[in-house]
Length: 265
Ligand SMILES: Nc1ncnc2c1ncn2[C@@H]1O[C@H](COP(=O)(O)OP(=O)(O)OP(=O)(O)O)[C@@H](O)[C@H]1O
Ligand SMILES: Cc1ncc(COP(=O)(O)O)c(N)n1
Image (cartoon, rainbow, N blue to C red; front, side, top):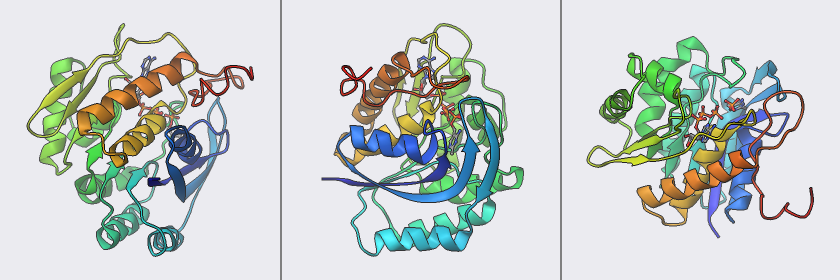
């Protein structure tokens, strides 16, 4: 069995963050472990409070896992403080996990900032170069690259820019594009591949990015190549969005166990 570690924030409503990651890991048949970087108070309507975990406790959690257990892949999500980003980058240098998928979480779908403005530089300089694969959405790619992204050509330009900053591969996600499509662009510095996706008309997209990056880390750990891993992960999240759960009063979460829950509605 493969062992996967998520380093991310907790979402009390279970739709995004650590909770989405562990559900995606379970659905992929891998053993999930977690290092919590922040505790958020949030639900389907929004985030109401955030308490960051200290860099010392983040490092202690990472060391506790790696000193005892083989880690086949790491997924990194919300890390809001520059000191925490530094601590994680140092720990990755020490433990050298073979696969690191970084989802550069900046703002929640409900509009709450999950990355402190002064930490963006640390994310670019310290975490991005550790990434086997970086998975920015369009606003995140815009912040990293410093230009606006409105077209497919812009997405290709952003991918090249992110490879230039040191990521080994990048998936620029088109979930935030206007129109009928939700196409993503994968680039590894040599080959570029468009992954077509039809936009599903739904409110229930809480946790799509967390789910996609965890599915991706699982697929890579299981030995798929980059294109196979991204294709399978996109299919997984698309099914999850199609069966999004109308939970609470706002944006409900992606469904992780569509087959398993068929008879439990
Ligand atoms: N309405 C939709 N229909 C189909 N696919 C979608 C839709 N919204 C997002 N996606 C897909 O879901 C995946 C996640 O992309 P998205 O751009 O939503 O990430 P994100 O904004 O980082 O997510 P999050 O807000 O959870 O961090 C991508 O493959 C994207 O194309
Ligand atoms: C702890 C945590 N991590 C990530 C997200 C982003 O997910 P979304 O953009 O769907 O709100 C979130 N809301 N909370």
